[in-house]
Amino acid sequence: MARRIGVVAGWVAGVLVLAVVGFLGWANTPMMGERQAAIEAWTDPAVQIRDAGDAVVVAPTGPASGEGLVFIPGARVDPYAYLRKLSGAVAETGLTVVVTKPTLNLAFFDTRPLSTFTSLAPAVDEWAVGGHSLGGVRACQLADDPVVKRLILFGSYCANDLSQTGLEVLSIGGERDGLSTPAKIEAAAHLLPADATFVEVPGMTHAQFGDYGLQPGDGTAAISDNQARDAITAALASVL
Image (tube, rainbow, N blue to C red; front, side):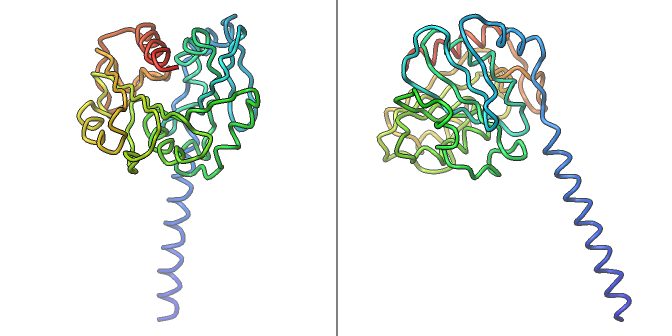
């Protein structure tokens, strides 16, 4: 009997080890950003980009507005995949963006406080928090931080109730988003303040909030990545 128990225990331990190893391997193989898009962001004279360890900071080379956005990537998406899509708003509005590097590439495993990221841009006077997909869900959870004035959702929606807060909220969705579909965003709208602003970009998919290629389960884009970038820039400029 003792031997059987030992065999079963060894088998269970082996299965658990394999599961953990498999999960760590999956979490640490993010959807990588497209090289050309990254090069365009890094070489854009209107912005300056630096790797600050915990995050990537994108700041304007021209006058800064004093506003900042802590942006949380979607699940298993390379943080660098968002640089080009966000750099347009940085250049046009003077916004500073801090793109976080989530623990295990999954926002829910990242327990660091918002100050970890806001401290990387000390010149910013006013902060927003936001994110793409799962990163947006995590941003909703961080929106109660006293420094946060605005919540910005990129193909995402909240799981916690923020309807009674004084937050300014912008929700940008894609008409052809197959993951955070327009219907899902509408179904969760009651969790946001009544005056939240919703922008739905015609023809835009879930993956077009970044530059990391196609994503399983997503829709088929009817606009180009450049058009998606312009739409994101315009939506952000309308509230900043």
